[in-house]
Image (tube, rainbow, N blue to C red; front, side):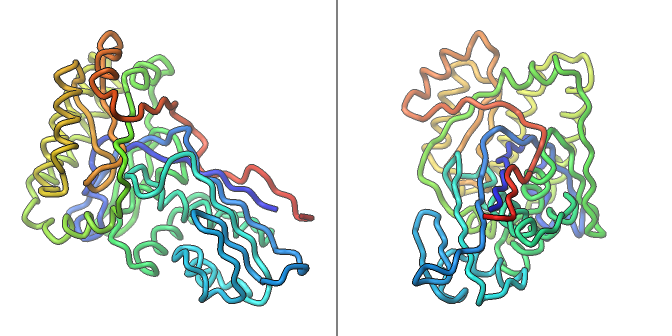
Amino acid sequence: MIISRTPFRLSFFGGGTDYPAWYLKEGGAVLSTSINKYCYITARYLPPFFNVRHRIVWSHIETVNHFNEILHPAVREGLAYMNFDPMKGLEIHHQGDLPARSGIGSSSSFSVGLFHALTALRGQMIGKKELAQKAIDFEQKILKETVGSQDQMAVTYGGLNRFTFQISGEIQREPISITDDRRDELQSRLLLFYLGSSRMSSDHAAKIVANVDKKAEQLRRMRSMVDEAVKILQSNAPIDEFGKLLNEAWQRKKEVSGANFNNEVDQAYTAARDAGALGGKLMGAGGTGFMYFFVPPEKQPKVIQALHRYLYVPFRFEQDGSAVIHYDANT
């Protein structure tokens, strides 16, 4: 039995510039971190004592005899993509600390975790670069979803990173070196809330990608914010400058996303700002889901009270990225 554990992520700056439709022409960059909320994938060969060949457990429990009967698209297509023998029984379980389709990078965490677990099930190892690229290719070319290339990198590598997306298609990772005190200073000012109503990010993303040429100015500015944010973190500048930059990024994201922002999201952002938040971000392509806010410690009780109707989710940064946390070839 194999168990993979893959984190979810928070993106700070540069979102939107990681879509191939943009960065293959202009280049892009994203600053993000992984957090200690995880997607777990358990995989094993199903013993031959059952009256079905394959068992897939997610929000449904599927018992099927052929891969093409599997309802979960990533599992169905992933098993074929990895050339698994359809005659050899498999059991795959998914568990997540956070809900799917909520902007936290859950679909990419699933893909990365699935490939990590299935590779280990074969008794093989896979490097982080190969694992991330496999997940990117799978989501964009096999599932044909309108997704960027940041999430797969962020959850595979873990930690606080700048990812640069080259016109050539190459993706470079630069871990951001800051002191533990500076990291704690940033982390202690971030409050995460769940607004509910999960949605398909790729549907919203398709609208953004269709209009990237019309939003070139905003996307170039969002790309440049990555460098500014890194400079703030690596300098002695007041950490609140990071929060103020998030507020500018919020305005730019609204310009790019347009109608993808609904009244509830706007109202939550305004309420948090009125209560003392310096900035914030809606995770994912738009709509609803998770939002986080940058809030000075003394203002946090007031912000939490202002957003009492939503679920407050404490979290910590994590450094490991996707990992196989259990390997037993005999079960």
